[in-house]
Amino acid sequence: MKRRGAGEREKEAKKRKLLEELGEGHLPYLTPKDDGFCELWRKDYSKLILRSAEKIPKDIHEGVQEAFLTLRKFDCFFRDLVRIKGKDFFTPVSRILIGNPGCTYKYLNTRLFTVPWPMESYEINYSHPEISQACKALIKLNDYMHRETTWALQEQKLTETKETEDCAVTDRPPDNAPSITATGSALRDQSCPHVPKNDYSDLKERSSYNLTLLNYMDPQQMPFLKQEPYFGMGKMAVSWHHDENLVERSTVAVYSYSCRDSASDVLEEDTANGRDPSVWHVGLKIAWDIKTPGLAVPLHPGDCYFMLDDLNMTHQHCVLAGLCPRFSSTHRVAECSKGTLSYILSQCNTALQNLQTDTDLKGTSLQSLDVAVVKRVEEIHNEVEFEWLRQFWFQGKRYRKCTEWWHKPMDSLEEFWRKMELMTSLLLDEIRKEQMEEESKTKIDCILPLLVQRHELRKEWLGRCHSQLAECLPEDEKPECRPYWEEDDPNMPLPFDLEDIVCELESLQKMES
Image (cartoon, rainbow, N blue to C red):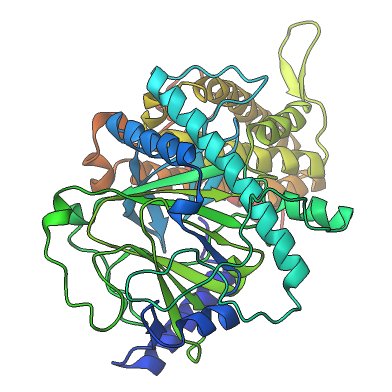
């Protein structure tokens, strides 16, 4: 079973220390109506860029907002059952991942699989024409976000050493706020700022979004939202965090749309001090800093904001709930070196090269018994099972609401995984034959930790699939423990429960020590 990493323990220690230093008090934070807001933004948060709704093309707004409502109408948003510190929790926000075909995005030990947006050379069949249109609108938004981000990064690079008197970052001052002027307005009818070719390629790479994570939440349906703990900013829809699994120094671009409904009739709270709790905000703070005030920036329907360069690394952000339901489209450059369908299929191909089918049809055998080779195969075996198959089926049949694009690849991965089960069985047979030989001990030392991990993770996933939280989900969202088989299944070379095999290898290991 995976243990909490040093990074996570360090983060928890910093959080405890910060809360201890605060005691019963709160750190200061500024909103647009506070003196010093512009100067604070310019000095400590200049890599946050806000693009107000009126600066964004009307056809973008119309397409994206219609897409949000369409996906909501077809029940395509889901609260994820995520694992934090060994416990399962439902996210307060409902989500759907849309992006390049075959891409995935992992957060909080949960791998989401993209509903593919339309791309050349890919055949994608959607469950309804309206969902197809929604995906087209989102890739159009993605292209717009990419162009905007590239412009902003170019201008940032050209002016990062210059002092400017402009406050930096928003196009429309909120009501009763000091005037805020824009710097870096993108998509202008002028030639591209001069940036060296190599630098331009780097900027383009860090803004070439390969997916967007769509979020939806109605605060009126979530009465138990956490209070922001450090600044007293009010209720949070998303707690303080750095976005995970991204290309280093890549921008995160967000389109925000809060829509009016019955929440409009709720009386607004007193806003004499602090942020207006009826309006959605993005909150920012320097990570683990108790000296610099935080920032709470209001988000009006159709606003976009961009967290440029290393802002996501040096700062943390949260989303502060308003009263109305809100959608967002958060565009990311996901770090996909180990998170694409092509990657895992390549891994499977590497592993299966060690499976040899005899030409006389008498059976199968392993091509090589070299320790490095069999260790690599068993590592890939675990990767396919726990990073792909069980992650996908734990999310039930949710993806079929949009498309069945992923189901054929998953069937292929499961077939490859079955062959890897056979390869493990063949390896165990070889170990039993060798018994007391030195080669046997080396192979046991190699394979035993991977089988122990496989055994413990299977128990963990089985328990998660049948937890009380999982059982309360609708039928098409209920986790499925797949692959799963009974002990006497004649089609499987090894049992689901590996306890006896682990004990056997441990005994052999002791005998040979």
